[in-house]
Length: 206
Ligand code: URA
Image: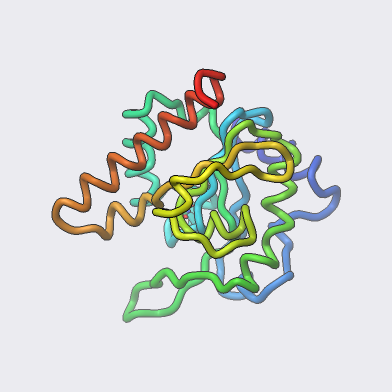
């Protein structure tokens, strides 16, 4: 089911091409595969993360690792069904550096975000969401072209040129990395922002 949706989207977005064969930057060389977005073609809400992690790179699906588990818990708390959302990333290949036997996530550069923007914009054009949730600063940069902090952007009304409202919130990995009281604080912000996304998509909040 998910595969059919994905193929439908990618074929419609870029006949004969797609992020799977992308060579627009060098990240493909060390990644197992490109991980395109997934979800129903006309989802009203799109979630945009940074890039696939280690597990996503191996399995070929977005947000299926530890950050995905935090995301799923926050979605459940916001009463959102993941199966009704389109979930994707700003960058489609996993960028990493070796650390012993582990592959450690490395933040994509502005050039890599820019190179990958074609695929994200094609997904947005195909899905036409009402609300796009930027999970973290990389997604926000990909969506706005600006270097905004999540703290600042959460207070601002932002729009994508295609007409979708952009909501900014913390990346689930920030919850995983946080310590002490900050863990609960970030999780509550994330849940609150996801609830607002649901309200905007339902027309209950402007
Ligand atoms: N982090 C992301 O930003 N995206 C994923 O798909 C997984 C982890």
